[in-house]
Amino acid sequence: MTALVLALIAGAVIGLALGTLGGGGSVLTVPALIYLLDFTPPAATTASLIIVAATSVTALYAHARDGHVAWKTGSLFAAAGIVPAYLAGAASGHVPEVILTVAFSLIAALAAMRMLRPSTSEPADRTRPGKATGAGAGLGAVTGFLGVGGGFLAVPALVSVLGLTMRRAVGTSLLVITVNSFAALIARTGTGGGLQWEVITPFTGAAILGAWDGKRLATKISGHTLQRAFAGVLLAVAVFMLIDVIA
Image: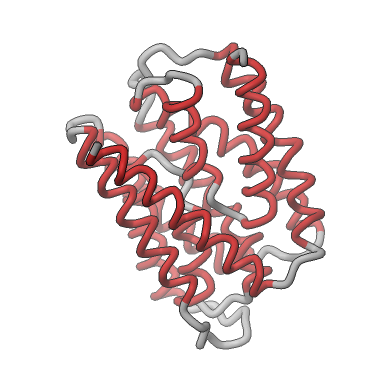
């Protein structure tokens, strides 16, 4: 199977996940670029941020149009993560790849387990600036350090820490992903190591189209089902990457 076909298939699947779940796109993108399309880890993390940022902007528009974005909470959350994302992104280039991979896997697994716990959060839309700022700064640091959009951590935080419903957390996380991805990209300028634009471009296009389909799918699935599906994806990716490191 050619690189173009693989890029189109992977992009469509990742866009579908991002549009439906409001995250998980970059968790899937990095392994796809490395294992399917032969990107080096530095190039894969940078390319992932490009793909996820472009796709998130598209998906954000669709969710915002339907009123599923908590702009005040999301803006506080995203703004708090800009500086940490930039600084951590600049520092990540000095850390061994195996440590980054293990950290990535453990954080994904922890986020998944949190999503599987019964929710005890309040109904929705009570903006808590202190919690939004603290959680946003932590997420920004993780985003910059691991080279991911951060949706797989943003959704659990928005649901469990800030009390948003799952549906609004999905839409709001896309705002956070977009801001954090661009901040991390700025820090990583010049560190991509030979980006293959002939692969990145169709990958991104397929992801954007997939995100629109994912948005439509999200309206037909319950928030509880979305939450469990999201956790399942995270656990599968975490286990796969840990096994790969050990092997």
